[in-house]
Amino acid sequence: MSLSLLNRSRALLHSYAPGFDERLASIAFAEREAPPSEVIALFKQQGPVGLLVNRAAGGLGAGILDAVHVQIALGARSPSLAVASTMHQFSVASLLALTQNGSGAEGLLLAAVAQKRLLLSSGFAEGNSGAGILDSNMQALQTPEGVLLSGSKKPCCLGQSIDLLTASYIRQTAEGEELMVALIPANALGITRAPFWQNSALAAAESIEVRLNEVFVPECMLFSAGYRHLLGDVQTVGFIWFELLICASYVGACAGLVVSVIEAGRWTPHHRVDLAAHLQLAISALEGAALDIERNPQDLPNVLARLLLVRYGIEQSLTQLSDQAHAMLGGMAFITSNQSSNWLMACRGLQFHPPAKISMASNLDTYLSHSTFSIAGAHP
Image (cartoon, rainbow, N blue to C red; front, side):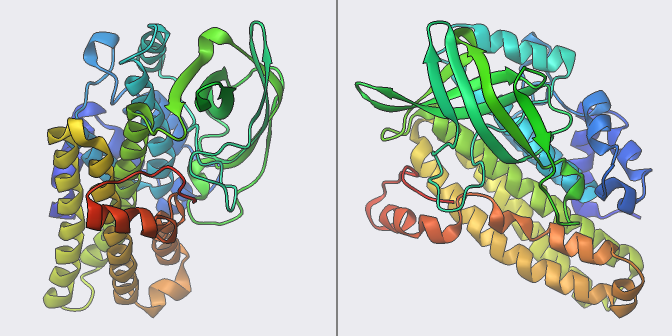
């Protein structure tokens, strides 16, 4: 049995990565979601790694709406993989934004991602409490040939499997603080790894600490994402992709929990339809947000504001929906297995991704009354 609300998402995942969903489904949930899990290795081998890279560069050329559905399908099978792959995909999307004004090196990197199936880590939001959303804890020492980077990224999803580490740092210029992005081979001299993630939920996402100790990055692998006080298109596009895909991943995770309820035939048709109604509302909200982005490329800051409002609405909805689905699975499911509890906790992770709703209240309130929005200055 399958949940019909997932039919479109799973069909699109199959079209971009034939047989991949079936391969994930063949692995027991407990094995998919607990380390050491093979889901990330399978993603690298068979999954839609080049989903957002255009076909001319060897990628799959997916549009924004298809990408949303692919993440929903992944979340419904493996929340850990969905969250981890979001970090890869939004990093790719940020590189795509850089290619609009770049020297061409970014385009070559994107082609390598698609053709060699390279995995990228995310470059922002290192998880420091109280830090600004555009802050970085990387220290950069400028040299004539590039920079020496030192610092830590934690949590860093895909930490054991990444091919390219992306890291952000601040460069001081006469015009102000410039946000820079460095692309670094994951096996570069000076990079070490350490355990970090302690929660059993989302434990297969390979969220570890990656430490950099004077890692040299040549100038050709350094890219400007604009100034911190003037949020540019590159940064805005990166935030948009992140928010959209991470929401889709958690909506998918909640759909997976609902699938368990439907398959078990729990409670009454009325209760099951009530679950499906709230799930469909979340899916439709994401589809609407994707269309908003597609149709208003000239108004990205306000598109981001509306997307954040959708995200915070989905956060509330998923809390209620996952609670109800978990209750419907019943006490015996809770007592005899960790599966329902891990599904429930996996549905709750969205609220911990930046920017937190409380940090955005003033920014969004300004948008509501003045129709202008900026994410600059917000805190996780």
